[in-house]
Image (cartoon, rainbow, N blue to C red; front, top):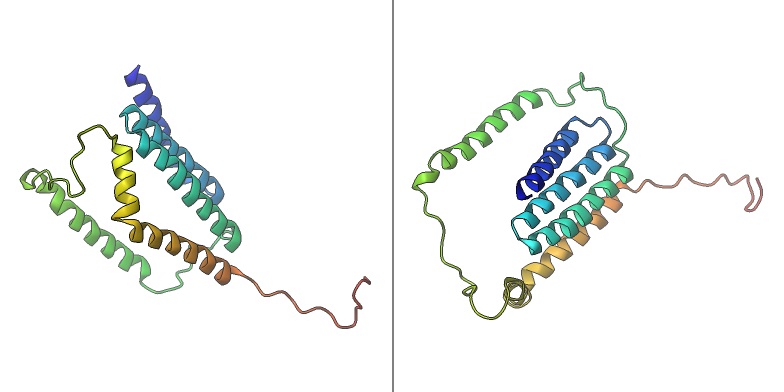
Length: 183
């Protein structure tokens, strides 16, 4: 049964990822992203990482995709653009060079992964005792890391307000010859 769940969830993740890239409408692409994120949450549940699955659904599929949809609809980016016109000369060549550089930066550590250690010891406390991992994570999040947690929330709120302010179109001035209440 675990194998069946894995295959179905992996197929949903792959289909959603292809849908994100191949969809012609941005809203459809965002909905395919939701499918991908839900598939990843199912894979987390299969690995018994229930907290990560819940965070995946609530934060990623819920908040972030809703923010994407909000910005897509607010900015009206669903209009087609002429891809044959290059607004900045040489931007495609620069993008190709930067992409190759980023791939090289990623490929070097991956190639040397066998020489890298498995990681450092836990800095927040051992994961043994009577308390569950979720309790320990919550205690660390709301005591040691509360400032970073609140700063992230404030940053997201500022980003939404900034998107609304930037996308707001001024209303056209009313025609003074038409009295209020008449048409």
